[in-house]
Amino acid sequence: MKYSYWLMNIEELGPVSLGRMLENGYRAKDIYDMPINKLEAISFFNKTQKKAIEKSRATFDIDKKYDELLKSDTTFLCREEGPFPGRLKNIPNPPYGIFFNGALPDEGRLCVGIVGARSCSTYGRMVALGIGKALAGEKIQVISGLARGIDSIGQKGAMEGGGDVFAVLGTGTDICYPSENIILYRQILERGGLISEYPPKTPGKPFHFPMRNRIISAFSDAIIVVEARKKSGSLITADLALEQGKDIFAVPGMIDSKLSIGTNELIRQGAHVFTSMEGFLEDISVTPLYDHKYGPKSKKEKITLVKSERVVYSILRLSPMGIDEIVSEAGLGYREALDGVLGLILKGLAMEVTKNNYIKSADI
Image (cartoon, one colour):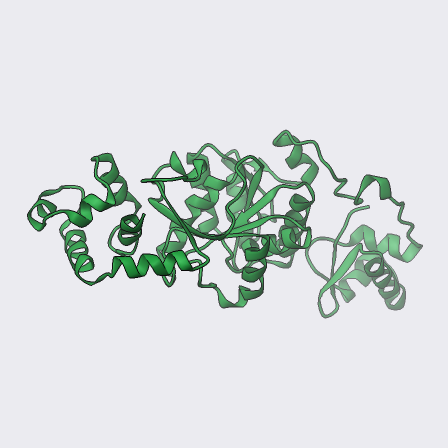
């Protein structure tokens, strides 16, 4: 394994070139021991890669570096030898090796990827959080990329629901990017696992993040896209998932919203429409453990609304409404409309997303 680890630390070598090496019957130790004249003669590495190999053989202290890895909390798996995740073996352009801290997703259980826009709307945040929490309630594993926006919000929802959560990183697993997600990063380490095809201490580079999407989709039985612009990394994940034969679900959005262009286009192209957790579970042939509209079925309770609450509830939407707009559409006085809004908030049916702007937060 130490020779495989050595190859993984040569930046110029990626999964494509290392895959060609394996296809040609060579292993990492063969490359490490190969005389320069023979190395120059092989065709599956280019000139730049061959020079990088020569340089690394002279400068990389293979025994010391591998010993440091073994003493760390990071586990390294390689396609060359030993156990390797079955879901990663047969995808197009599979990783040569992976690193993880914590655990890997249990391949005997369902795992769902939640992806979407980094700059998401209040509606998208609420939906992603609810989906993550509901999946956790169904004992379904959740995986994403720890990115800002929908990815990390869906993972936070799964955390709140007590689920098993995993993150595929575009850096080494010892680096939290973005740094603002450090709390979530630490929680995932305790309740799931951090996964990467890049060695420890590898900083994030632009091309790393699209590459990690194929690993997210490989571990997923289905992908849910909550919000996506016209050109979005989430659409790359969806395309990779389709290539891998996975089901794609898209949350529909308003036709005049830039954040809905990608998801609505996925639906137009034939993706499943995600409108409820019950419908999603039916589509993937899972019997619900949980009534997602009312909570546990044994604890279902009827919610009673007074007149002002009923009127306000009837006109609230998932997009924010200002109090003046609510007063106008509800046909109520200012005080009566405000009482209705506050009553709905106390009953968990509405929420204030910014000062004096409200949305519907639950169905009855």
